[in-house]
Image (cartoon, rainbow, N blue to C red; front, side, top):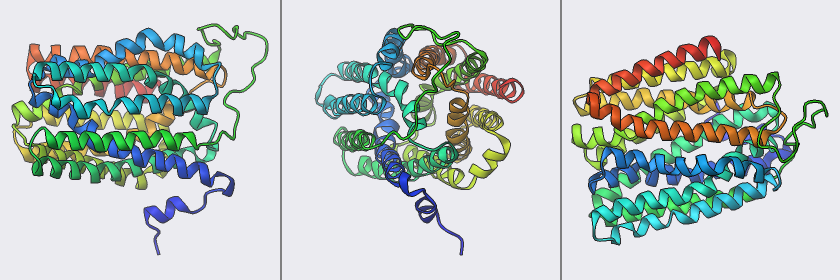
Length: 410
């Protein structure tokens, strides 16, 4: 009899790794509460109280500016602290700040509410820098190499199904309770889930060395903000540059999506929740059925395919005028996210040099935040010049071009 997903992730795990795998899976399960509530509906709430496209963009851009300023010093600091402790303590600080979203609706002036949301997102940026730098090395040093693709795929599947459930639940809560009470309940659910992820990360044990010990030749001083440059480093730079372009296009799209759904298609919260939940269910299905295909194709080629599917989603959005086609775009986006959730993450990690991992990760975070800043500012500007449909078509073409470059040169 064919095993279901839940029996599959519970069997075959090496005995000495069972505790680590359990907490990695619980970490992402609790994160699903946050993703299915606060992440889905924060920008929706901001849009409904009058936030502009530029302000929605600044939800991502303002934290990116903070990160661009602090990521290199934080990267140097990360070399001197223990990886696992650095991750969970930083995560806990960032997660506790999320409670402030619950109190934003008590502010009477909607303009001040939008400013408060931007301020909270900006304050969360500093501890999240350390999480971003150390999370990858923690995963590399706590999961055997032969199990990483499986763990990442299972984590994505768990995230998708939990996000699916809590997105639908959040939609029901928003329909049942008047605004802003419904949004406050939704944001509190997200806060609880996010806090428990920090607890799970505190229980992960490091079993493998985070960095190989390099030879003396070409080794940079331990306090340098520049990593060791060798063939592995040069290849990693090429990968990071491609992902910079890819993610910039993604962040150009991010602030436009809620505005298009609310202002152009006039969708209610229930419909938005259903589309988001549908996409997450597709992520779940892809995550449990496609990892073997991704292994055969390779992470680079699979990342290119995921990028092409995202391009198709954006092209379909350019022609979307009703709820039915909007749901189709959610399906395509869910499949793409399922592929990219496994392939892009592992494509990046498999090219991470063995030497100076924390410094390389800080540089990766630097370029990631640069993509966030550029995309979050450029997306609303592009839509203002061209209108939403043409902006989506341009972004589709850009994503397709990047997919081709990753396929050929990545």
